[in-house]
Length: 255
Image (cartoon, rainbow, N blue to C red; front, side, top):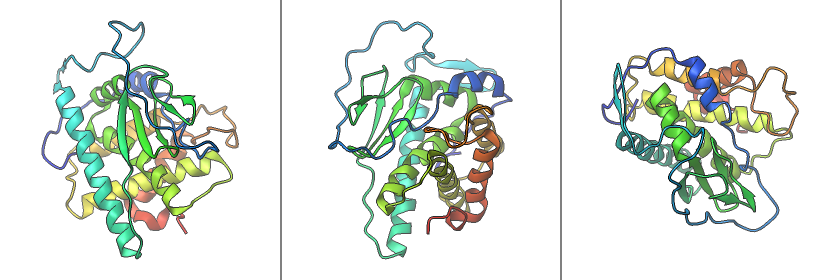
């Protein structure tokens, strides 16, 4: 899935993906009490990190093709551009001014970026309302891109961008899970509507990539739904994403 045609075909990789992306979430995405926290300048890269995902500077050749960092960066750029275009149109249609998220920040080490004084962990992607930026662990994100496919990149960006839209709309939830499932629905709407209007082309296998990614990022079945940080089970996240994908924003309880 891209605005162009850089599609690769990926086989079933759910087991490997689960180990890779189980930490996906929005740990620092909420609204805090302190003032804006800008992302710090990245520190020099370490030469080695035990147990880290594959370095994005190397290309991984698979049986179904080569997935490069250049492709990943291009997909991120496309996802941001299309999200800004989509949400800008939604805001204008309701007579509101749209303000894009300020910046998209890749990082490589825990503590390299902070949000409201909280260091962002590895293996994560977050929207930080204090500073209005999306930050993502680039090593982890590239590894997920290589294992799942480009559709996961568009979902990941769409989910975090949705948190920024929630802030702009003044949406507040009583429980984290409500906020997260709504963001999944909003990400689905942004992607489904973009496919329907021809902005994105859905290639064979993209829907499977969405499903594989969503199945991998669900909460542990034993996690209480009301716990702080809960995102929803794999089934809940898949259900809410495809509600938005199929029925657009009307399915996302934005009003």
